[in-house]
Image 1 (tube, protein in one colour):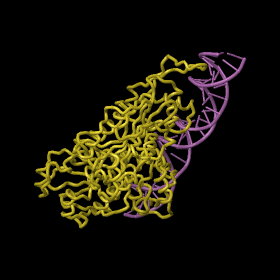
Image 2: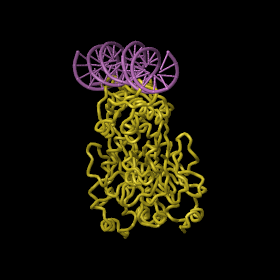
Image 3: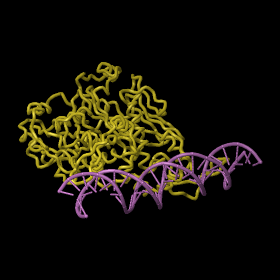
Image 4: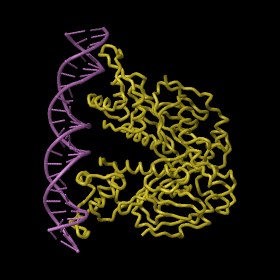
Length: 265
Length: 265
DNA sequence: TTAATAGTGTCTCTAAGACATTATTCC
DNA sequence: GGAATAATGTCTTAGAGACACTATTAA
């Protein structure tokens, strides 16, 4: 669990080529706030680039041949190794001040990477971040560092370290968007095992919403959506009554994802 | 009403300079879907560039010194002459296919504008549009054509002409976003005269939502939000009972804009 | 039997939705 | 008086929210 590697999805040459190649759109990037859930904890995947004291959310540039959605998916796959994660665009951020940081100057950039890049290069202009959030079960993930990253780690959303640029605001807006999302769409398919218990999904909702929910009302309302199927199996959890297992009714789940639903928790 | 002019906010030299200057961010633009309401009609402000058969929503590039919000506001001010309009970012659009149009090729571009621009220039790469919508009362507006625009006009949202690129989808998403917005925030300050009647705001809501609302329930729910103040004056409307005039309670209106509210119409 | 957790039913109260009559104005 | 529009009250019903007891398991 919580494995970490610097893997072959990254190469130094590849990263270096970004700044000079004609492969990428200029002045645009995607940021992807990767939320990880595991046993009542909601965390976010953060990086600390080498030589910096501050952390960043995962992100990347957009290739001229791919859409912004594809770029966000590529970021998630590169960092987590998992494809087909649920992700959602929620806002774009763009102000001239947003990429100003005393630790990121052309001089320090050169010092850090060994690359000679003119101070008038477009990467020192401000860029617009199209921001997404992604949901995953973090115990399934082997996180991948890039060559310029000193650390990559899951951080609890209520104990965030110092963040670079406006990334604190981006995370806070991502969480707001997720909390609105959860009232209008089903959540959980990527966050729970295939078979799970009512207390497990109850905990998931409480964790994401950051508040406790009455179990009787929660169950009544969740079952009323029709997205769950009760199985006849139970899970043994020691010296306690064994909870029943449930599965998502994938057809109804997908229909609810597409058409929306409303549950007032 | 519905005036039109080519005014000094535009100049040909200025427009030409966009493509070569270092003043703008590359591969990013803002699109601003300007909705205009007047007497039970919801319209959108569209342009038809000279030499094209298709129409576009208003938009523009982003200066390196301004935020995307400022760019969207600048677009609205330039086109309508009005400042302080309500506007809202709702989504960003970015796929390699989105700016492909058989009428927009480097050759045709040169033919149309007389500008020699290399086919590898960044304006022929795809760009990401950060999309906003703006609300205004269209009888107050004097619309402004740019030097490359052959026509500018308000078009009813259910009778849109052929639109360039993905602008049909952008308008459709803007309308969806506006309809969700109207359930969570007050709407009307920029769309109604200072003093207005209940039937007038009732029509506004019916027009935006595209459905009829029971007047008794509508009044009850709208008054329950507290954003309206009933005046003792009435408006004379001919051989009918004179409706009372109302004003927005600006303090409560702004608080509701900031904190959100919920009204299920 | 005890300790821990799972599972579930009922009451109250608010508010959404459906619905029709009276009031005002001017001709 | 008639024609047009404004204004408003009540009933029903669905569901949100508050609340507590019984069932199961294994030590």
